[in-house]
Length: 235
View 1 (tube, helix red, strand yellow):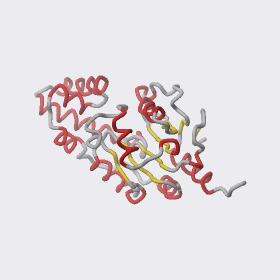
View 2 (cartoon, helix red, strand yellow; view 1 turned 120 degrees about the vertical axis):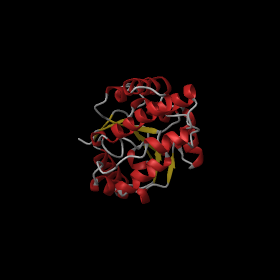
View 3 (cartoon, one colour; view 1 turned 180 degrees about the horizontal axis):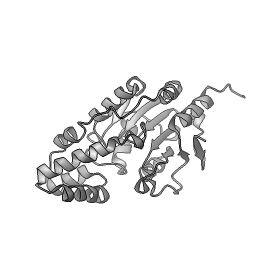
View 4 (tube, helix red, strand yellow; view 1 turned 90 degrees about the vertical axis):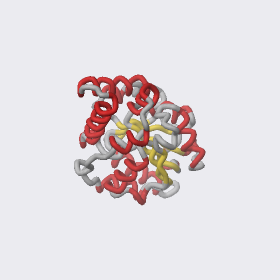
């Protein structure tokens, strides 16, 4: 089964705006792309803070837990240049992310606007969308810079997205692999869909009432939603 509905807010066939997380959502975590990003973070921390590799990796994990992103911790504690950091850590090889024709087809058939909301950079999002063949399907990107480096699940970025793109929250759905990042979306009135994964930290709060759908196959979930949208009235 592609997805499970726990509770319904706005019916899938009536969703007008689709908001997607980027990493480990629009491509599977099994691509191990984020491992490249983590290695680049470690390298940056080693060079910038003169730490040994093991200490740099531990600091990266600590900042992620305590500040929401490693970047936010480095900005708050170590006063690093966030633009320099983002350019360095997202200079990665995308070859390990395979084409996904089923996902492209499902997104192409899906009615409504599609927007990316990411704790990464706009450039990183643009590269990945282009690599996946999805660049033309998306009308907007709200990245960590636009959110003033205040990462999800801070409300500021969600509110910015709604305001900047004139999104009506009751007819919007957000898809995200980190369950806790869906709580603000639900609080603002959106429908939510959690991409189930293998990481325990991403599954924290996955049983909360803010999760409306649990997705095991994104292409299948979106294809089912598109089918509901295209269903004839009264069918």
